[in-house]
Length: 272
Image (cartoon, rainbow, N blue to C red; front, top):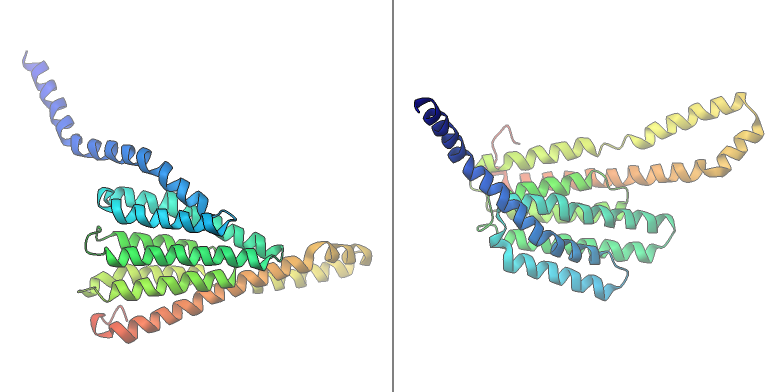
């Protein structure tokens, strides 16, 4: 029948046009089911207390990326960065902050060292495999690291992350061939600089002054009790957050200086 034939052709046409997209979605789902349990087992062990276990997990993760990266594809890599790598970075950040609050500086340093090795390993991999990886992958990774950096509340951790980011930007930038390749990097630097504006300390000091004025009207005993119950530790924590953000901004300034110093001839006037 003419009517039914037309409907079948229309349906067939839609099915044919949707086939590549559907195939990619299915492939991504299958690859995630295959690789995510493996990768998450490795990243889970990265935060273990035992240094030997942490090192073995890092070695296994490095070897997996080295031997199997060609099978991943851009979509899977993006998922790995956002759903595997970023969560373990956040976990390490929280472990560092917890250890610092408990004055367990040795444990905090262990986690910072682990993070530094993880980021250095990722840098090495991305730089060595730059030609064989999807072109947009490096910007995607830098987006994830910049997002992570905007939430750091520990000065030592901030210094490590920003120094590793600088290494990656300089190495990748040395292989850029047109100014347009710098656009995403410059935009991300600008966004991170805004996100790391250290306004917390000023806000906290203003709030503290307002609270003191309010307390002067109230009961002196309540005021003393309130302060002894955590006002000063909370202010100290705010100061540490501010210090970390200042560290991020200082390191960003150094990154900008390095980009202009090393790649001035490659940049457009607008980018500079």
